[in-house]
Image (cartoon, rainbow, N blue to C red; front, side, top):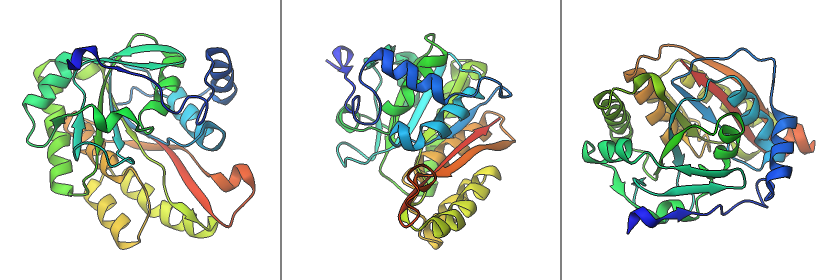
Length: 273
């Protein structure tokens, strides 16, 4: 039975601390307590190990009012499961506690979608959504999630899923209480200078709320942004729900942390409102 699914954390102790106390302490050290708060409809957060991308994720989440319903969109790194994988029932655990899946919203999305498929396997070992949860839990314990992962780069399908998500939100009349989180790192394992140049173009497309341009530029410039697909879906859904602005909160690379600038991964935190 899908309802009995408890999704245990798979990268606690690797990407972030496995103990509640250490995890809270690490997030506390990364957040920005003085930042301006946005009533965001969507955002993009990185998903690497906290020592590398945690500052970007924490400062971005610091600038968002956490909503009661969070739609988590991430890339599927594992290759397990279907190309458009949604979980509609169950609980996700982290060291900060349990988060329930909003079954009503998830099932409305599934029943109204041409592409989404009910699938637990895609989520069982995938880290891209799990690592975002503790940041959200640090600021709020009063939310439910809908987890979806993607293995498709088909822009027309991705835009369609974005619109289907917005339709389900409107159907349930919960527009004001939804935050759509796209999980993505930027350029992978290139020299710092090259990463900055490429990521600038991808970020520009996101800030223009232009998912077509994002997918074209990542292909044209060979930008190894792992979550371009979920970011395109987020932009499509957010615009359908009324978003017309975006702001880059923070960008850095792993090289800014390790001082190894020869092979870096880029991280960007963006709010869409």
